[in-house]
Length: 221
Image 1: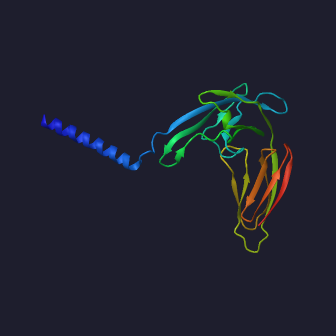
Image 2: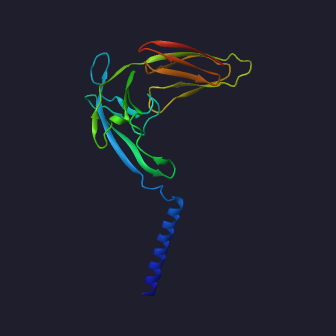
Image 3: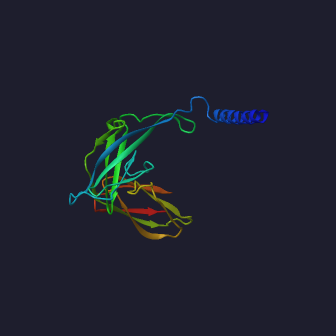
């Protein structure tokens, strides 16, 4: 009986120690974060043919075609999608106070398929928790293009990183390293009808390109 009591005492002390350690790591008021959901649904279609597009990528973000949420969705055989929008409420030890964004906050629903892309902009105030709202069709349009003449013109150069933003792929802005003494032309596809910023160590240029057109930028460093 004495051995059993000692075992129970050790177990109680172990759990008490763990609880105290957790409390020390998580100050009062940092717990209680809850996850909330709303849903949007719609169809992705080709702007030229008007036909629904299966397997088109759909994701949400706070800026058009910027890095978005941690999940992507694809349309079904009828070009339809249902996208879950997530937000958190409470106090996080690492993120501080969390809440649903203000109703006036913009939310972008981005889509791209093959050589075309487009987006919708809605307001957070349109979202209904635990419910689904229907959105207009996303009519994806053929990409536009930016051709950059990348040339080293300085007496001493260490090369540059060249970036395009926004970029019509999930995951953010790509950066490409061009070494010293480079002299080349690089062309990048972009989503049309958006201001696209081409930036490097010594400058930045902004272009606005219609679907199917090409803009030209000099990147001299």
